[in-house]
Length: 262
Image (tube, rainbow, N blue to C red):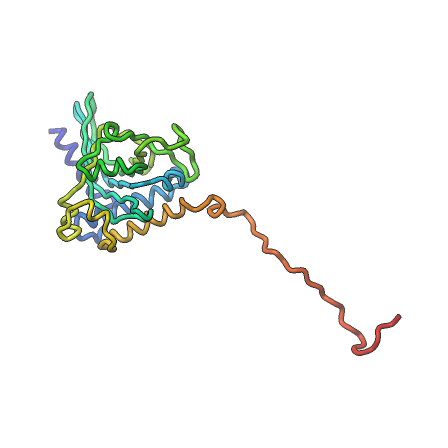
């Protein structure tokens, strides 16, 4: 009975956390909540995704209110969206995804977390679109480095395929998601995209997605385009002194038209 109460409480908390008041459908609420999670993460200078990682990103998965419950064994489940790079390095329309996974060992309790995954390889994206990607088994996953200009603490070359960020109780930090699976939510895609359930078709579409997905695409485009600018362009000097043209200011002539004295 207690375990049922934990699950119910966690699910209710996940549904209520940051839920937009004006959302009409479940899919619109998921997109709105994904936008909130991304903006709050990037608003923390010391905890945001580093520019170097954003510049290398091939895909981004946002899982708002991902629920974790445990009694003897553990389970994690939730839903969110994934966007990927297009051939011209722009960003695709979002596809809806689901997450799920389990763990063994004695555990107890419940938790709701917002999760952001940065995918650095096309192979990991193809794993999701082809059916299911298991973190840690099909693709290496590491806790994401933090700070806009931070270098990765475990590898200066960002050699993991996926970097994970999680927020619980208002704080973003690295998180271990070994064993969790990410797969396409065809039902949600069909509802939002008016019958289109193919992830490949959605990701390759050239049309603007329905609102509010267009705003999410614009936000991801904005943060990654800033990250791709050269450091010299991003950096702003403390003071900028504009060049001043040399000028002279002659004294007024007391006797205009007269020859100057010897």
